[in-house]
Length: 373
Image 1 (cartoon, rainbow, N blue to C red):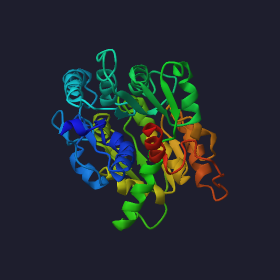
Image 2 (image 1 turned 45 degrees about the horizontal axis):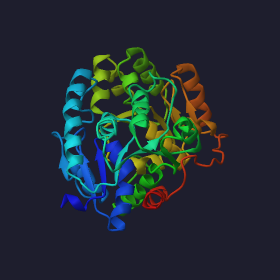
Image 3 (image 1 turned 180 degrees about the vertical axis):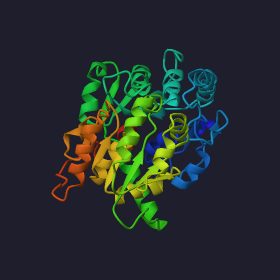
Image 4 (image 1 turned 90 degrees about the vertical axis):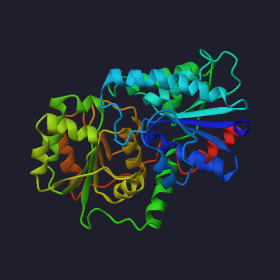
């Protein structure tokens, strides 16, 4: 019965589920039932099974089979979001004893969950809306877009803000008198170690027995800009080590549109591969030599594995990692990227000791304990 649920999650994308599933497991391990609302932004049913959690109790729209539901079509996203807004409100009204509603990150689903569950639209609500991974800021509304704007919206409408680091906690200081702001760390740390254990249990093998690089590019501000994509392709074609580019649907579409896909295919060192499942991908990150990416989570994961990481962006909200000697923001300068690649590949290069600003294993347990009080 829905009256049994005091905990609920609203999740739309695989990236959100990756960061939420350790906390879901924590509730499962303590025999605390939770209600899982999927918005359909990504297909989460099979992924949930792979991660050892229950499938969504309800899915609010047809689940997308592609890596991007909207392919940068803003009008389609807004129309979908309007319907999901009212569906989330309806589901929450059916949970009379709800205490905490969790949502994660900076996606369309996150924004919809925060607004639809806020006191602005639920004057007499008894539950609290909790933002996981709060406080990240690039301080540039166009980088990343629209995520930077979405984070600010979510912060405003949430009741509890779970900051991932000291820096993110400080970014939220203006809200400390009005909201519950708690520095807990990033659940992504738990996700990585759980995924590594699963990878070993499933006997997953490295992509190559020899040293190799790993690449992903999927940020909106990169994909819609031909000049940026040309720079990224030029950089990848300079690599002299086996390089595996996990190519998302939207990335492939844009590379074809800009006439750049064949250039990558013709390079003997670049291998275009289908996106891997999370568990396999985490394992490959643990084995690779160099990461080139524009995704925020991969920046966090490179810190865990202490892998050299070139960030293919002009600004990042994960700024603490840039203080290490193995994570570098490229600002998409081809000349500087080439220099940095030479530095990382030099036999004299060594990764210096660096304390992970996003915490150590056990973040999910901390969240469970803090909110149980």
